[in-house]
Length: 303
Image (tube, rainbow, N blue to C red; front, side, top):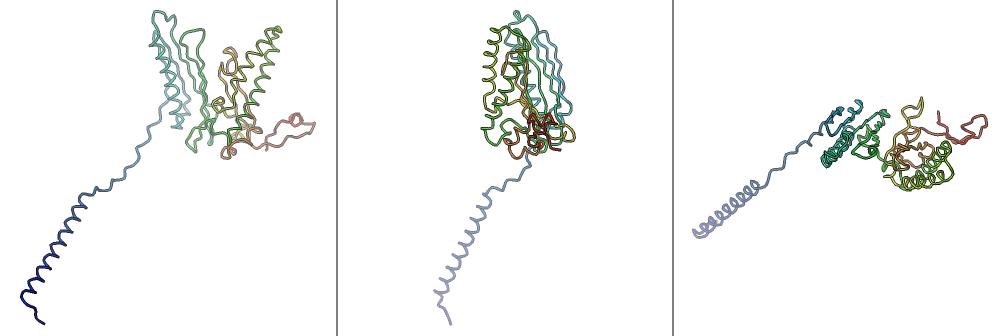
């Protein structure tokens, strides 16, 4: 078969056009690939900041004195150490702010911050630290500083009052129990003081109102708590929680810090499931008259 020169020329033109089109498409693709941003290189997360050294602080100044002490054992837990340092720094910052705001000519004595952190419990499962002290910035007495820090080492987090119970209504039970214990303790103190009838009635009224207002059924009310270790052989488990109330919360300043111990028997039905293994099991109350604890209906620690 033969083709005319005109047909061959047309064929070559079409072929040339196809080649040009293919080259153009390739060039466009190359430009798009060149313009596309390269995938970002994966970077490692920034390293966690080093744990504070928790160095004891002693400062003497004509206008103020600061004394802060830490337990060396707390340095083993970076997250806990950060919380302790933050609390101490905040207390010191408040004192310095008060010093700067005060008129030196009217400041009759140095302001004072005393704060002591102490280790309460240290087990593989749980660590508890108490912060107790006062900050004096004038007046009749210093402002109390009371806080508790409960750390879960294996979970690397703080255990707060909000984490304790599966249902917020559990605070009603805790509140009722705390009020009962605090009112009973108040009555015992008043009886021991042998107050005149009028003074007795006034004390019961005023302090009783403080107890009721200071034990509202909320996590914030019971924010300060500390674990109560069980006796051997269950020393690494807990037999209850001790809720701590600073001065003024459930009584006047002169009454100091008040506490209420809530036993495992009351806590266990209310706790979130994850926390129950931290507490000892309890036997149901017995009625054997030969055992005073059983006869009184007190919970017994299971052996």
